[in-house]
Image 1 (tube, one colour):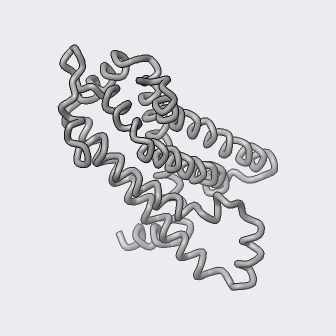
Image 2: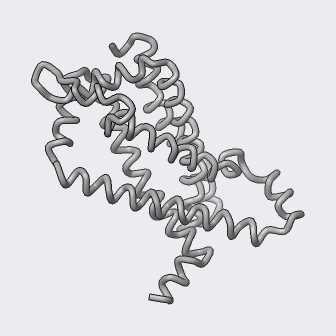
Length: 225
């Protein structure tokens, strides 16, 4: 047990845990985006999907609890890696390293914490109905929870819609560096892997940003109503 704890607290252990939990969270982001894009298929498709999820009952809440644990471990590991890097980096090296790294890399901890704050608000807003309890009372003609109408109503508030777009921009920046760093963390070195990492991370991040941001922007433009 002590040996496992020592491994986790080490720099290599913390980076591997952060990368592994990051992969799991990335999988959730992709599945969440896939479900969200059903907004463009219309109210029936979106509400049917949401109803299917709600029918899972305790299984759905167990999945949410698991995601919360993974999210917490990911953030804890990221903070530990950040502190270890600062402690091991001389001032002169810090200056040259700053010039060599990308903006996404330099702000990855901040972007991650901002995204965390947004996720908490997003849950309070849409999932738990704390900020807008009337959303939980919205039903479609089939008597299902009207998730489509809830999303449209929520994003008709320009401040909410634009804050969502900004949060997705930060999430994409976070993913861009995170996905690029995965190759190095998992020991995939060499020019070929570096070229692949440099292209895949930013490209996937852009696609995810466009996918998520398209929904509030479509509401504000009247495409979704």
